[in-house]
Length: 112
Length: 112
Image (tube, rainbow over all chains, first blue to last red):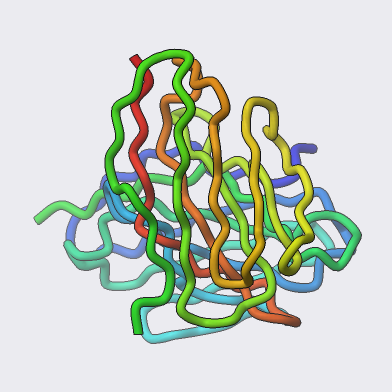
């Protein structure tokens, strides 16, 4: 299994739709996980952190399934402004150097 | 609060030239990172630094050199640029005891 693997996408959804992305990871010892958002031609920005079974922030819900080693991101009531690439991020195996491994990203386009 | 700045934002250089990309943080975060982002590969770690005068290789270090004489600065040098180094380069920083990385706006480098 690759260190971090995401749905290849792209996802094209209408405004108001609910969309979910999945991500699998290989390091079973990982304790924290992240979803970053990257707009076109911009830098990645932290969207959500997941330290336990899940996290919810408004329309966004991140869930963690440790047994199956996957993380999901659910976006409810999609807005045009949600169009972006979503990166699944997992700390590197071992060490205390705070390195992260980034998935290749899933492109979401929300259409009017 | 500027966070992380990168310069130049855009650079065109010729094969064989030396070029230095600058990264500056206004915090005093210990860890700093350099990534390159290419289509089909996502973000890949080039070098990272745990503190001033402490640097280490990431996933794709060949052809790059870094230094960190001051905590706030982390320049990346391409000693002899090649076309394969055409990419978008991001600098990032994270505070102690945290995996949450904050990114600069990126430098778009084209090697002709």
